[in-house]
Image (cartoon, rainbow, N blue to C red; front, side, top):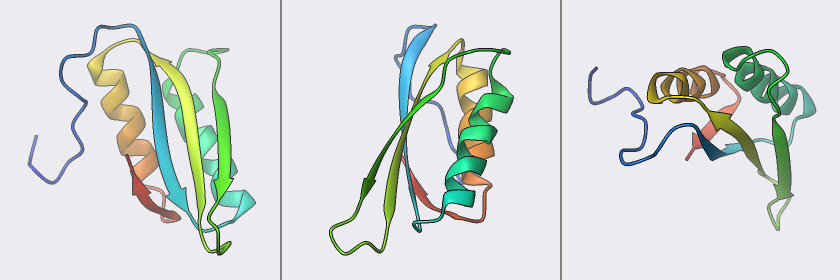
Length: 92
């Protein structure tokens, strides 16, 4: 894995609840694609919740996507799928 690729946080005990914070422009289509990208990497029926917060100027939307990561590889796949979306400005 190169330094440019996202890495799963070290020290987590799996399975674990993971909050992934994603910053996008306020666009419902992008928000839906992000949630779909996360769901695609999880087991069928696995719960995914999202919380939203619009910036004070309304220019950006912060999405916190909560899900259960089964292992580091799955978490890495989720992060890669989310950051590959062209609408993502930043993911933490």
